[in-house]
Every structure is written in structure tokens, then in C-alpha cells.
Image (cartoon, rainbow, N blue to C red; front, side, top):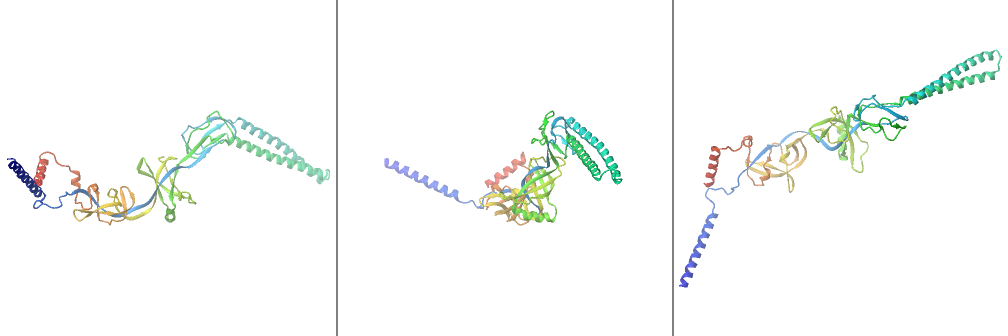
Length: 399
């Protein structure tokens, strides 16, 4: 009985093993009429590469510098009696800024004028004596030596009068220094010496600093390799410079290149340049960092949208449409980028279609389905139509 039981168990096990093998081999057989490549087509967006004129420009980090900076200092010693402006105020050339106590200098002017008047009276008497002695010496009533002494004395007093006139002018100049005027049109900074303080002649601490900000400079540096091209283009005409403000890149300020330094910085290998901007709206401010864009001209180039360029293991690459549903990965050399477009220096020809959306799902042998504007704007319909389409897709899958 035991032998019969073991024999029955063995037969059942062998039958189960054979049945499982047949089921497995039957599952591996391909269904009739089904394609070997069952991978679905990946929807992508494509754009044709174009050839057009692109601006040739060089970008650098620039700093905004005032057109001129003036540190106001007193040329006379005295107490500040009046400040005629407020900190941060715009002033014009010739506006009164400070008044220094004028009383000592007014007294000095009066004293110099009094000395001049006294010496003028003495000079008048000396000239009259010289005239009389000139008549007497002709009649030999006085000696020639006496006449020479009188004439010399008159000439000496005349020189004294000239010195007195110079003293009067100097006293008036010192008095004029008591009123300090703005030498430029600009904007005042912090007031460093307040009203009531005593200032000295040429004090190292300025009273106020004025920056001229309209017009204004943008200073930037370029590698010395760009210097020959800049000089060549500058010799043919003026070069434009844009100042791109980080907070508002869509509205750059327009200016002109007005300065190229006469020396290359040996420590950095760069050359300093300056662009001059009208700055009528005061959008550029001294000390501000901006992106300086030097425009050298225009150049014909092959252009694709920047989103078409991808970075792979071997560098930058682009998926190029091949045929109706195929793609190939093509390495490219990318030049500059501007306004969402990239210049392709090598790898793409005008008219070739490149993938701009959906690249992350693509491979070298992927199949694609090009999306149209209608596909991208319309989503799946809700309700019966959606159910019907879903039923169709399920039906196709089952069949």
C-alpha cells in the first residue's frame, strides 16, 4: 500500500511540473500580428532651426560710477553759520551750499581798502612834488640829485599802492570763500560737518560729497583677447553698450562706449572700458552692479530655442528629428544665448527639426509623436467621450 501511495504522489508531481512548463512556454510565444517594438511613441514638441541675423555682443559684470565726484572743503577758517541744503538733495551748478562767518573777512577788506586810500593820498603828493622838482631842476634851482630822490620816492609809493590793491583783491577773494557754491550738478551725500562747527582751511574731512549721476558711467573689464576686435569695430564707428539691471532685465539702459584704457592689467589680463549713459530716469546709481553688454555688430547664425539644448555625458547635445517618428542625439557646439535663443556654431543645419519639449523621455532609438498646437492646448474630455475613448483603448489592448 505504501508503494502505491508513493507512486501516485510521484505521478501527480510529474504531471504538475509538465503542465507548468507548457504554460510557461506558451506565455513566451509572441501573439500573431503584434509588432516586436511595443514601445509607445513619446509626444514631443519640435521647432525648425533657423538662420538669421543675431547681435554679436560681449557680456561682463559692470559697476556704476558717478560721472564726476566733488568733495567740498572750506578754503578759509571759520564757523559755519548756515547750511543751505538737505542731505541727499539734488543741487545745480552754482547753488549756495554753505555760509561761513563773514565778519572777520569783511573787516579785513575794509582795512585793506583803508591802507589803499592812505597810500593813494601819499602817492598823489609824491607825484606833485616830483612834477615841481622836475621844473626846478630845469632852472637849476635844485640839484639833479634832489630831483632823483623825489622821483624815486614817488615811484616807491606807487609800488606800495599796487601792493595795497592786491591786498584788497585778496581780502575780497577770502571773503568770497565764505560762501561755498556747488561746482557741479549732482546729488549730495551725507552731511559730515553740521551747522555751527568751526572748519579749517583744507580740512581733510570734506563738508559734503557731490556725485554727478546724470550722465553716469558704467565701468567693466574684458579679456585682452577681445581688445583687437573692440578696437577694429570702434574705429569703424561708435559702439553701443547696454546696462542690464538685475531687477528689470527686460528694460536695459542704452549708452555708448566712450573710454578704453591705455593699459592692460597684467594681474588679471583684462582691459578696462567705460560706457556713458544719459541716465535721465536715474535708474543707474553709483556703486550698483549691472550686466554690461558691449554690442559689436550683427552676425548670421543658425539659431534654435535654448530649451532644445541638453547637457549629456559627452557635452551639449540636441535631439534631431529623423524621418517621421525617429530621433537622433547629435552633439553640438553652442555659442552665445540671447532672449531665449542659442546660436549653434556646429552640429545643426538650417531647417532641421529639433525637439524642444519631452527630451527627458527620449533615447537614441525612441519613437516620437509630434504634438501640434491643438494637442498641447486641449486636454482630455470629461464624461461620455472620455469613457468611450477609454473603452476603445481598452478594447484595442485586449485585442
